[in-house]
Image (tube, rainbow over all chains, first blue to last red; front, side):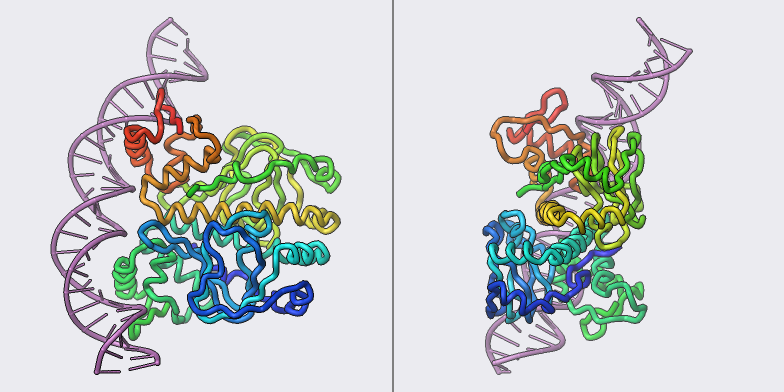
Length: 208
Length: 208
DNA sequence: CGGTTCCTTGAGGATGATCAACGAGGGTGG
DNA sequence: CCACCCTCGTTGATCATCCTCAAGGAACCG
């Protein structure tokens, strides 16, 4: 059981088509750290690909608590679904650090899709992966006890390949935002997990 | 804020192509009430469309508690993502009542997609709607207090159109399974909502 | 060195889960 | 037609868990 993060589940080959995007009218733009790319309830107008940098998609509730829907990084696209069906964004997207994005307007994006059917297949696969990821993470978020939620998150990070311990480069706050828990809870559970030898904590950093 | 249910968000026009599916080798099959169509962790082998009936997709945790990922009904397809990327199913699917499904094998499905590019666009839109629905429901499930979760669920049912009260035809147990709460909790919250005039309860039935 | 950002701990409280028991209605078979 | 069984709804009491608030420490950076 894993909380699936897009970062790990999508092939990052879209930049192979960089020139093609440019030919179809894509524009490159620099975004500052923490700059908002689009807001929840904005109408979708552009197709975005990350040339360099990283983006987080999230919701914020009335009390300001964030729920992270996903992280995206170099070579990945994001925010396509509302564009495809002419809808409002269900989440906000912001840059985690200074980032370079490629923007393609809705019309140009549809031209590209129409004239390059192989792209439709590419996006079908990208969206499929994302749905499966979301199904898994919903399940994990709702069904599990707290400890399992965190373990699921850690598993998703690691990609379930190696047995050796790897550094988990998320703050406790970020883990809390992904799992819907509070920082203090994450900290306390991590202490338990450390005692149970499930993780190591060295110099405040988590190894799993 | 709404917990989005597939039933409400997808156009149900796939049956317009019934003959085409048959031409590509689709087979019609009757499933009994509660019969399992596929299990979590099965490899995806078929494309399914509901000719008549309804299907629920869910996960069950160690203690047997169910989390419902979505309901599907006549004219809708389900379980495509794992088929498209050659993956295992993240959920189990079962018939809610006796149902007739159209099954198309993986190979035939890909033939159809390849030779009918307009279908790729259709599926891009179906998957897009589903992603947006899942994003919304994750947000609702994780961020809200209990009362809001239930109101979100009710809003999703109603489709947010009319102001008049409509009958919510879900049992309290089903609402619990969708929201990740327990039956007793759902009952108690519903009583509160009734007192606050948010819903009516007539003859044990919920009107919202 | 001062200001962030992140991590940590403790005490107390609210909330939803759990367990147990019961009522009401519908359907079925004797 | 009645007895039985199911499913669904309901209520109360108790408990465990996680949240909240408050406070302070550690690491990092310009």
